[in-house]
Amino acid sequence: MAWSIGAVQMRLPLPSPGPDATREQARLDALARYGVLDTPAEASFDRLTRLTKRIFGVSMSTMSFIDGHRQWFKSQQGLGASETDRAPAFCNVTIQQPATLIIPDATADERFATNPFVVGEPYVRFYAGVPLRSSDGHAIGTLCAFDPRPRVFSQQDNETLADLGGVAMDILELRRRASAGKTGAIPGESFEPSLAREFAHGRSVLKAGRIIFNNSRAAVRCTVRQLSPENAVIHVINTAKIPDRVALLIDADAMSRLCSVTSRAEQHLALAFES
Image (cartoon, rainbow, N blue to C red):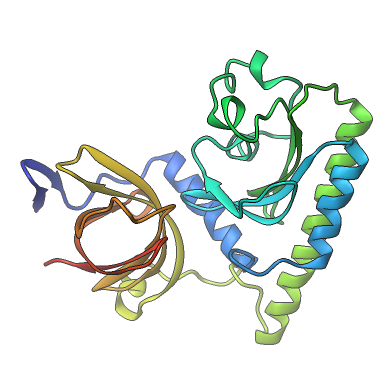
């Protein structure tokens, strides 16, 4: 079966997901188990980012979590934003590293020299970020220090940042287990329903997706937060330029659906699947 937007056709379902999509879904599953996304600021995490900023003498520090389309700040010092697009984020690179990512001077690093956060506000030069890893090894976010001035980061500094990141994950892990204890099971360690079962009952999910529109000339990353046989709710950075008819693709599920937008807010879209 195929559907089209304008003159461009796409086939349903998509090919089986590749290893990158499978790994990313496992990472998002791990993030979902901690129930931290879009929760209010908390003193324990604000203390950690304040300590990070103070210890390393930088002007900015964040504790961020990466979902399908953004980096979201659970805690931040020295920034006004609560989230940014995932694509240009330094922390999006950090979660792909085995250990701390250290950038002494971003203007001298070809990966970041033209990054919008380097050539524009907050004019990042120095960056150090440690991946925050779940109990099963998935990098769900970062604790980082950054500054508009280049600087050197010693091995001792590296170890201190790693310890601070470890404290952050200790807190999250204790909370996860305490929450699981109320239901008698640790979330994510029991049998996960299949996609067919998700469709039968509908449930909250955390999946990386894309929406396609304008005759497939435009694509926007999104995070799918609710999914049922008939509809989905997705989060995006901004809905302003997204039309009322789009295609939703979820690579990890090898799924593509033509959708009508039934309601929208600044960052949320409710989608109804077309038959």
